[in-house]
Structures are given as structure tokens and as C-alpha cells.
Amino acid sequence: MAFLAAIEQTALSVWIRETPSVFAFPFILFLHTLGLGFVVGVNVALNLWVLGFASRYPIAPLKQLIPVMWIGFAINAVSGVLLLVAYPAKALTNPVFYIKLGIIAVAVMLVSWIGRQVFVNGNTGRVFDPTMRVKAVAVTTLVLWAGAITTGRFLAYTHSILMATDAVN
Image (cartoon, rainbow, N blue to C red; front, top):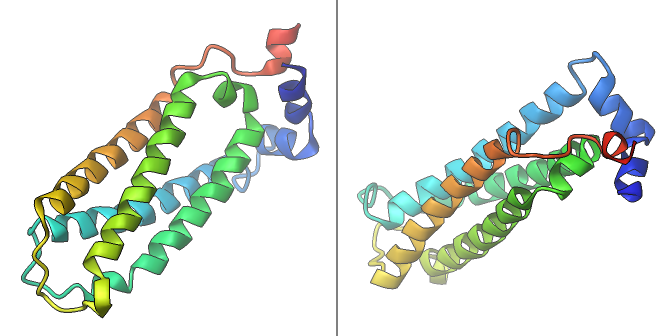
């Protein structure tokens, strides 16, 4: 707990948590939400295309969004670390946080696998006949992203320790 208290007392952590500036906690939270929109939005579009909901359209425009998804992921990673720095004990003592990270890790691996299946041999046309396995992975990925969003929201309400310095005293 002393390590978490030390993080909480860094200038960056105090600034994110306590400054009245909208460029601190509110802006970081906004960036986290924006990155989530890019990541999950592209993932949902890709998975729905694989499941046949938009198969009449070519995949090429969607392939161009893959870098946007990874930019969103980078935004989420950086903003997530900053949110963690602001309240390390709140997240790192909460099992829901680890469930969220696990869900995200599996979802990222699965969407990467789907991308390799869909865009194999430079496929940019409408012709792609996904196997039942690819469709099952697409459905699983959709469920995982819903789980990541849900667990992320639960983090605001399921913590038992907000600040390590309060728990130590």
C-alpha cells in the first residue's frame, strides 16, 4: 500500500486529481472515452461485416480504419495509465480492474486474428465467406468489448479503497 501511496503523492497524480483545470482528469477521461470509441467502433464494424450485416459493401474502406483503431488503442493506453496514476489504489486493489484488462487483452488478440482472416492475400473486395469459427470469434469479440465497457464503468462504483493514503492512515 505504501507504493500506491507514493504514486498518489507524485506531482502528476496530485495535478490530475486535484487541479480545477478541465485539461486534467476530465480531459483525460474524455480522451479515454474517445479512444474507446475508435477501438470499439472499428471492431464492431469489422465484426458486423464478418457476420454478414454489411457484406454487400467492400471491405477496403474498413481496412483503412484499422490504423485508426490502433491509434484509439494507443490513446486508451496512455489515458488509462494517467487515470491509473491519479487513483492507483482504486484500480489496483479492485479485481474488476484485472478482469477488464484480461477482457481487453483477449479481445485485441481475437480482433487481430479476425483481421488476418479477413484481409488475407490483400482481400479488399466483397468476396469473403467466413467459416463458422470466424463468425463465432466475431460474436465472442463483440461480447468481450461489451464486457470491457461494462467492467470499465463498474470500476467507478466497485472500489473499496479510493486512496491508499486514506487506507494507510
